[in-house]
Amino acid sequence: MKKFLMIMACLLSFSIQASPDSKPFAEKRIVLQISDPDPFKQTLVLNVANNLINHYGQDKVDIEIVAFGPGLRLLFRENANVDRIDGLTNSGVQFSACENTIKGMTKQLGHAPQLNPSAVHVSAGVVRIIDLVGEGYQLIKP
Amino acid sequence: MKHIKVFKTTMIASVVMSGLSVSSASQAANWLMLQGTEPAAAAGRAKVWGFIQAQYQKDQSDAGPTPSGEGYIPPKLIGPNLNSQQQFNVNRARLGVRGIGMPLDSRVNYFLLAEFGNNGITAPGGGDAHLTDASITINTDATRIRAGLFKIPGPEETLQAIHVFDYINFSEVSNQLMLERFPQSVDTFQGATDTPDASMGQYSRALGAVRDVGVQLFDSFQSADWDHSYAVMLGNGNGLNFGDNDDNLDTYLYWSSEMQFGGKGPRAEGLKLFAWNHSGKRTNAYNKTQEQDRKRSGVGVKYLQKPFRATFEYMQGDGMIFQGQHRPTMVFNDEEADGYYVDFGYYIPNTNWELDLRIDSYTRGENFIHPVNATLNSAASDESTFDKTTIGAQYHINKKTRINMEYSDRSFESDTATVNAQLEGVGARMAVQLTHIF
Image 1 (cartoon, rainbow over the protein chains, first blue to last red):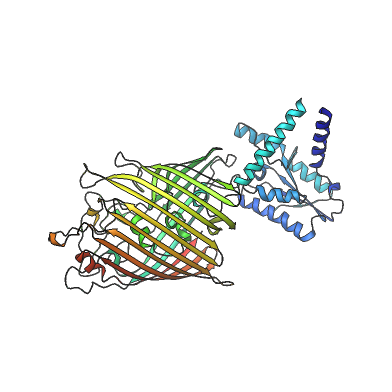
Image 2 (spheres, rainbow over the protein chains, first blue to last red):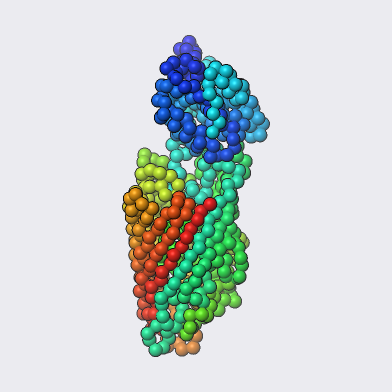
């Protein structure tokens, strides 16, 4: 039973780790940055991701949305856009949450913010963007 | 063992998450939620907003055909000043701010709005501005708690945001039964006048604007395709006045169930059923030893799926039945009243035009006391009936700007001879209004 659970946990962990190989037929690789406190930017970044998928096709574009700073609120568990985030996640979009921001917000709140389970934790949002750009992703900040 | 704990935690979190995702989607055309909450984790610290309404109204009433008792009374004059039968007016100019003070914590949000226009809120007492909303909402897992000054849960016509109201003037039942006036002991009786240029507005305090200061528990939850909402409120029963003027508190109860068809915000489409009840007492401003019941209740249904809209509301009241803007001394009564309206709207496809038709009727117990001749007083069973048919059109210049045009044919009558003589002269009224929301 213990082994089974460990295997399941590993599989689950593997399944939510995005990598360039997760969409082997992707012709475009795009990282979207959300770091703005303006709530309208949340809608905008989700619209852009949706439009990219509609334009290129789900399998032809690899999209990662990196949230840090005030933009991390997009990935809060109670976020009003949760249905749209779920839909994009099902379309293969990865949502990355900055650990540094989480630590900062934890200090302000007195507890860690509860995040959307679809969110993948990355050590630093900016570093994640730099790494992805280094791997050939195009950075877009709506 | 640690893995089992993690697994369990993940599963529980997933279950909780799925529940939250359903409930967070239930905003729809739900005035309780639209006015009392903010989108979780997606609202700003302070969103400045407001709207301006500029209008022109012309009344075609005359003094009345009968040789005695006729004259000009408030329904024949344009409010709030009630000293003319036509006027341009900036009847609403509201500026507000709303949001989540600490954006990281969606459990608390606020709503602040002030009126700078010329209407029944600002004109009495000669003020230039008046706060209409100042509330804080605390969102918990069990319920939401809203405290401060805000709209009371009630009829759709008055609970809805006024800047998306499909007409310029309210139905008679909402105007007379729901828009509470608050007389002061200095407010006096004003008889009908021979000419339409005497001010008939005898109230010195702002009307209630269907608002109160108090605390409200409310929430909304989804079951299949239905969005259910409730509100339970306790308030001062003193309208826009911050404090209370007696020891009586009002209770407000509200329930709505809406089948959602789609869309979001004020124009969300759906079929909504609702019922509400208000109960309170008022101390007589002219006799502090006397208290009077003020009870209201109603039911209604609203259907909106473009290009069609239809609404029906029925309301009734016991005690404290409004007797006219010129007769504040008579409002502390034990009369009864009821009324309804039906409204139809048609959005002309592929255009920016909307057509509107509303038929409303209101009957109240009459309480007229002639200042000189007691034989002209109302009999105990006398009633007055106010029938109105309004046709209108709206042209949407863009999503934030529209022009309303309406024409109301009115037929008012009373069992009380003197009142009937005054009401006989009530004629049609036309109005044009430009609204811009920012």
